[in-house]
Length: 380
Image (tube, rainbow, N blue to C red):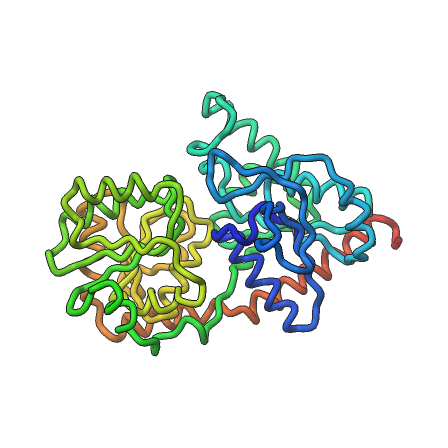
């Protein structure tokens, strides 16, 4: 699994890689991650193959493996059966070169709408429309040369087929979650006591604090909420200082709590502290945090866009809203007032996203890619 994003970076891609790797290994398979080198020995993971990398100045916490390397021979010696590329940028190019050179099947996982994120973080000063066209030209090459492409939702799959109509095979395989780790029976009081939220109505927002996540809308909407409602913003990221300043300017210092970095082992307890969850990001290709929240029995207020509207059913397990403060605030109020049936519906929705399902579908696709590649190579 070559990936552009891996530990210590915390985002949806690194979560997908670590979660999938663990689940496949528990089934007896061998998974080797190929990742950018974070630069310090204590941050490296035993068994992972690292490419020398430099820090991505435009986006703190990320690393770019842009240097020449002899890792081709290292990968040749690993004797792998299939390359599951979890990156779309630098590592995707390397994965394509390795796959071609070693005649290996390659499955490309399209996790991120990089064209949208680059608007905020591009290190190259190009006019945006031109940059977007160039990126999609590059993505078409990657997608068309893959043996198979995985998308986490149907909405993303349709977008990709509209841009790259000659993909050999495209499959929607959402990432599953640990149903025992995220569950409705967790102790709600632990994080409420830690952050002084006893007796409050609590909305939970979990994500990397980055500009494309549209957290500004959530903060503006909080000014329309009742005084007994608090917003618990879980996570950190490059936009954190700006969001804290905005929260203060809006007079929300006593109602919005920024937790900063949260250890992975505490994450489920932060969901448990909430009465409902909120996500206003139009950037999501799956919205894993929505599924984690639902697994903990939380109804979700989500923006009516792309992947999120595939998971959140308005009035069933949460409420959808448009990109507007009043609409967002209304959805949050409805979620906070949700009855037990809606909370049970949320949990039932999350139960559809099991790691067992993810693994079974991945293994089927891997085998298809192996057989298809072998057939195209004349049985070699």
